[in-house]
Image (tube, rainbow, N blue to C red; front, side, top):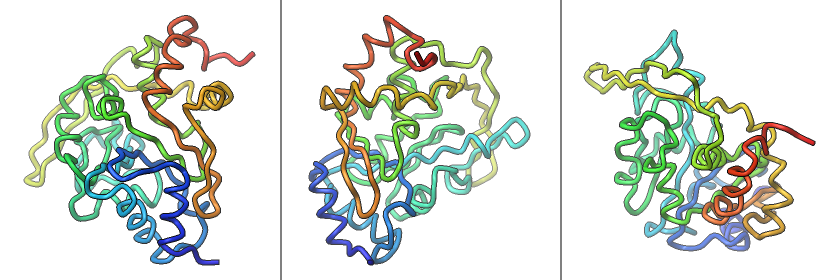
Length: 249
């Protein structure tokens, strides 16, 4: 079966995605199944559902490529490792990518340029005033297509904002490189990611309180998350027990 763009749009609408939403998408393109127009068909469906009044965001993480050995980051040329959809999305017309060597975001829609602006000015990718914090300000939704909570990068800032000790002891030096080859140094404390394999532990709690729900996009078993509700539920838990994700019992 080949899913039409209209079918994917109906799945998105049934999941609870609406015009004007700010939507961060984590994705496994393979899990969706065959789609009319392939990746472009998925983008069309997403864009037509949230419309130009919304904001479509993909994580374009590049920390696996921007390392101590290769410390340069270029918005246009540095690839991301978060899947084929983010990699193609960041290259699309009218998409803006934030200038962060590790955890950049790419955005399309109303206020996209302003949304990603200034990301490189923060010492951590997930600063509360960074684009990741702006997701919370905009009451964003996170759609995890064919992947689980272990892929929900938004839970990284939730940990950081709740005081969980997840930042590196020392910053690392990286360079923002413009099209003319000018290199601007940035020192960044990075999120260790040590707990992400245990993020599934929050699923029963978040489901119980309605902060996430299970949905289907094409063939893909998926999750829709409300950023603000997730943060409000997990913050007091993580403040009381910073080892909530670090220890399984």
